[in-house]
Image (tube, rainbow, N blue to C red):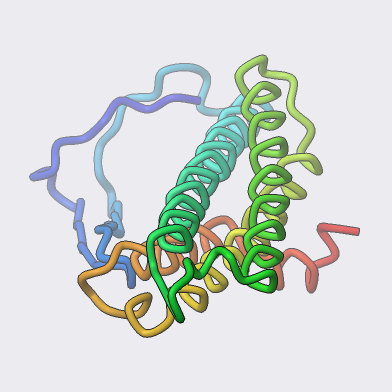
Length: 193
């Protein structure tokens, strides 16, 4: 079911803007007797449910793709830092433990990239599996947060400064993970095996 949009100044429509922890903006819209004209049968519950499910699926797939982009940025910043930052006359990346942590980050990134690509293709085709979407969301949430936390850790003190980008990646990943339910919520509500 589609509804025509209402003007922002329409009587009964209120908008409350707020900021997320990553400094992105969001808004809460409240409709109180706002006139709207239906585009379709307003009594067809199946059509309404399908439209709502499609919007949720597209949103979840888009968040998975964005999460992969954030993970890529954090990974690239970390690998670049590992090759340029010198300690005791050698790059940090020469340290075997450091390389192992970067390898684990690479595995997490590739896992999430595959999951996000799969659900994006499914949603684009219109033949998506809800459980696949939830699993992908769980994967990018858990692995994305872990990767970004590891990136901040491997950067040391500079990783938590406002001026350095890797901290912004972590904050954005926290916001992405919370949208449509985070991994812990999905587990508690038995939506994921």
